[in-house]
Length: 401
Ligand code: PLP
Image 1 (spheres, protein in one colour):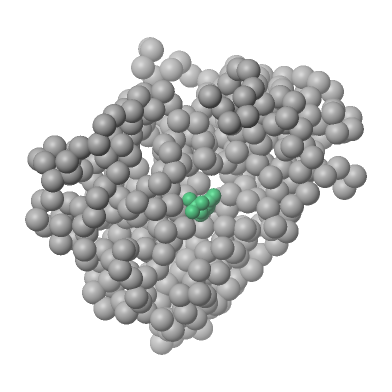
Image 2: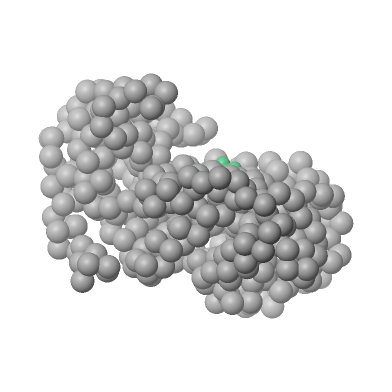
């Protein structure tokens, strides 16, 4: 029963937490188990192998941590760096801002490269900093792959190329919270040293599992990193990996079975098909926004995000009112504008276990709310633009061919 009941299904279009598919819900509906029995280590061993596929890594070492994206950030930073280390971090929206705040509170020397909200990471400034840094004082580059607050996707291959061009040894730490399992992400190919995500985003699970993956170089760095960590210490995990028991503390049995089911669904569809599906849903959403005569917060096409679209409303409308009414009147959950863009944008999350018709339902709800708040939208205009695109571009469902 919903805490505040409404008939029918809630249309959950916030950019995380996202819809949990029924097989994942069913897989988690189970009793606790003795995690010291042979069953849980056997399940964990296979999960640790399989999870590498979503990062596109063969050489990485994954950690399944009972935490959220925020804890995964902390795990990445404290295991690889020491207080006072210089890191370069891009500020482009609310989540990069929060990560920078964490970096500063952990006492790193953070060199912030700021862009307007709606723009991507300024790589020209990074190039200048790398060029100047002949003595390699920069220990790490921290970047949010997909800034969920503004719907901006950064070009990680370009960051790697700059590091290579300047032969700079800095670690590359990447927040993939709203990208991994939805957007093209290649940990090995792009030379990412730590990648991280949270279970409630594109994996379509409940919140509560932070997934961090470390390259051999990051593991090497962890041997000398002096930041204080206890709960997040990779060494504790590695010790238990060696023993074959896997867990330094009690794992959430239900989340492990949920992860198994979530990965099974992703592999059945095919990770590349999952990424293509996000590409279609992102494009269809942007076509609808255009048809409504509204602007995308993301300022250039090269940064458009296929997991979240932040829609700018005219100055005479408060975007929070759109989000409020959508929930109160149509049982549609949209994302609020955060911090600098509060009241100015609302967000449509299109990530995770979602299909074309669900998206069209959301878009039609958005149109009705826009009309409710006095924006002169033609009902059906965005839906028609999105449907025309989807009708031309949606392939047969892979398992039903
Ligand atoms: N990074 C990004 C890009 C996010 O979108 C979020 C949450 O939305 C976080 C980090 C923080 O994750 P959590 O809320 O799971 O701690």
